[in-house]
Length: 100
Image (cartoon, rainbow, N blue to C red; front, side, top):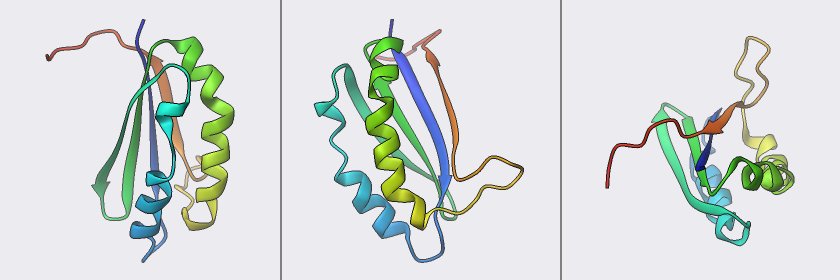
């Protein structure tokens, strides 16, 4: 069953272009089971990363590569506050898909 991961992040002032550039370098298609990747600008310096995966197992297997990419991003990320750290991640199986 299709799985998705969604991660909210906020970049430090003036670092938006670098944040996008670092994501352009991330080759999700090289990760087994990775289908699609979106980087959504959700507000002032806020972004949401969305990944689509063949299965939860594929998503779990890709976590080391995703954490390595996050380690490259950490210097330009702001703490989100409230004990969340620099990311607010969510993942799970798709319960409903409406579309093409």
